[in-house]
Image 1: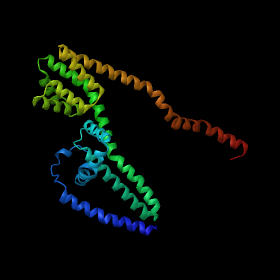
Image 2: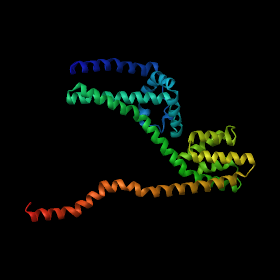
Image 3: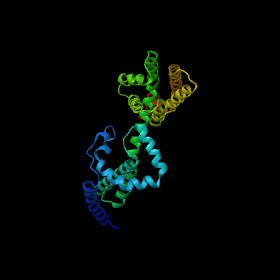
Image 4: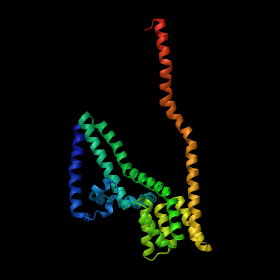
Length: 297
């Protein structure tokens, strides 16, 4: 198979694929004029939502049904990242990103180099990168959001305890934190908690549902402590105060462990970047003088 036949097959494939997706976008797919739920999601899912929804309805659903464990994993990641997307949309985004990057790279290499075999190989690896790119952004967002929640949690617990000590009940204290706590991820989660409690859920039910969204050990320990205090009849104010102190102590210990690891982490950059420069500054003048004395320069 020569290069001309490869390019011909690719053009024929695109001439069939592109019109199919264009027709599917405007005929078969539901209208997606409500863009409010796409606020905060990666720009790729926002601008290509129609095409992603077409892929999600077919191939994405098949992948989710064929690999339930993988679908469960990305469903948890979407919860942690607070992205209002479905697992099928994630798979559809992976397919679209892989196809787009693979075809663009393949055609670019083919027209620049003129070698169809190299273009196909490079396009294949670009497609692999495109396949993992959407989920990489989701995992990164989930990790950053969890770190932000863990950092904000001790202050939030102290504020709730202080508000309840001043005479507010738990719902009023949560409402006070939401109004005074800024625009962070924990404020958003407590806002959802407040809405759940206002709709009739109990305090523990709302906290457990919030724990399924946050999915951090610190918040799970906080929910467990509140549940235990409720069962034994302990004051929730004292429980919150103890949990706040424990979390600050845990954060301090974590900072100490990270600081203790700093010398070992600095070994590699010192050996790679600093020591060669020191050797060059110290030994190069000596070497030059030695060569000059020997008549080498």
